[in-house]
Length: 289
Image 1: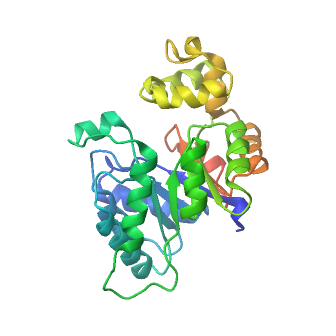
Image 2: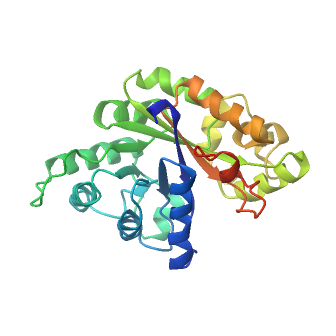
């Protein structure tokens, strides 16, 4: 699978019992997905979960999507990067981000401006001396970034940039900013549902938290939206921009649009659950059929 065809999945696995978690990653491997991305919320510890899943799989890459740089000091993160790259045989991906003021305040952290915070963190990671066996290759390092300054930092200091809840138009702008050589991972919601009423209702439910965050508003406003689009769970136009919904043809057109806009990897955020008839999002889009 080439970089331009890579399809990953992001799932909040924290509520899954151990057996269900193992079954989930086995299914993703069978379906041919390239990577599983783990968000950091308030459930299972992220690094421990990544290590467990790397031990449970043979081909699937496991990624942090994203590891919050407020949670672990830079030396610890450098150790994580090196250790999991070595022990997994190169299947670990380290995605970093600053999260947001609200979540960090809940953890007791004082919010800092994202650009200097991330720059200083990367400096400290680079300076860390780790006394352990070196992996054959370092784990790829990506940073979550939507705006031009953080994206430039990602292009200069990391292997790639991650965007989240942004449409193909934003992907094209991101590619222009970071240039042709930096990897661009796009995380986007997909929903195998052709009924617009059902699809938009499910999307609004899933977007309920994100639709309140001002830094998403700033990016979406640049794409032609206004405060009116953010009210009442989001306008239909906003929902349809953020979420790929419809039949298999519509979902694959969405994937193609991201690739055409410059995405190196599309990470599917499935906003439904597995169905016995095989019509759930991950079954419909499975690279292995």
